[in-house]
Length: 229
Image (cartoon, helix red, strand yellow):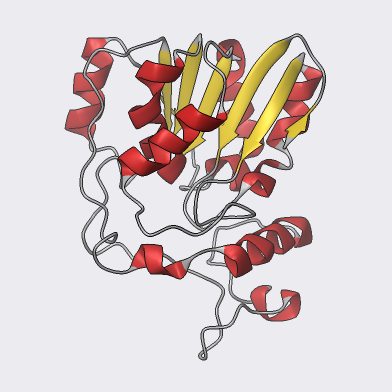
């Protein structure tokens, strides 16, 4: 799905359990900056079909098959940042933004999901009390999350696809690349951030932001990446 009709082109790639709808506040901002924005649903998410394999290379191949080469900007959050690493050499956008990318995922990381005891997705009323402390989620954010959770293929959170193995990008970026990190992040250790920064990546921290920084700290994220878009 695409929104806007600007002369510049951008694609947004969501994180695990999300879908293209997670960008409902980011996409209009980019449209206002003159972009036509493509919202991707990764395999097993949103309206894309479920699959028998969820390797990073599979997700990257899907992006290569779906998106045109030479876009002005591609941004990937979390799992989307993993997929983008696998696709960037083929897609060759003018710039990339990695939003707290899932490159080194702790083995004991637990994905918090708004589920009832029977595994079904909570109602909006139930989910209002589910959101962890420090997540300033509006009703619109919760509706978006509940919709994407209902469409998510939860087998991705089981063996052999979970836990995610480390996926470290090339130490010299293929294209100009910004890495915007949560404060703090569990997914890009300081030593890795330092190595990538020395190799040419632009490393920035979004002050006070959690992992879903484009949802919970959008204003701070805009300030952090404004000169990059």
